[in-house]
Image (tube, rainbow, N blue to C red; front, side):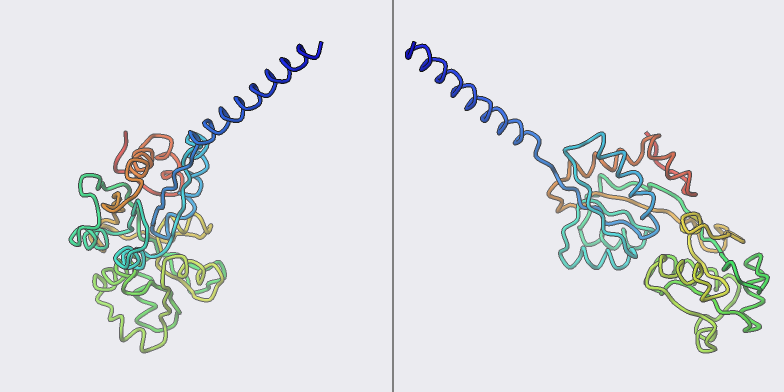
Length: 268
């Protein structure tokens, strides 16, 4: 009887050890890869929505986002910040990184197109319904307007619009009728809070903030607003980053981009 009990205990011990080993192997196989994505601030809401779908389908992947102006993100990458995938709101910042050898050129694509939108605060009584109205009021000096800094893509697009309308930005700033934001979200907040009469942001940010778009700029006014994307040449998770970039080109991701006002340029 004692011998039978000893055998049973031995079998139980071996099963327990075996299960533990198998569990350890299983957990090791389920290790998570972290993909760090640097993306333009105007993509915050859409990428966070897409993330929920992606990680559900790829539980072995963790996405970590850093949202800011494309110029700030470019500088951080140049200073050695860890980044696997960069999505810019303009070609200028991506070109700069490309020239410096920071991106894998073979992965670079034009992912999306956006529109530069003129938006008014809900409580604005200025009656601004178009870019033409904006020009008239700026010349009259009877409004307060928010725009992006010159190192921010939305600010650079705004400068082109001012040039199109023959508006002197410095003269307007000296008159105290312009305020600035270090990224498009700061400009959006000023409009939303009613701190200004109007501002220039992206159509997608207007959607996210539930702001009224009174006009959008044509290609003649500021060129196309293209969002390029590329995997970094120094990425530690290049395959996983490329896989996520591929997913951003699928119909499922494109539907989310289109919902907020983006136009997908690369689809699979």
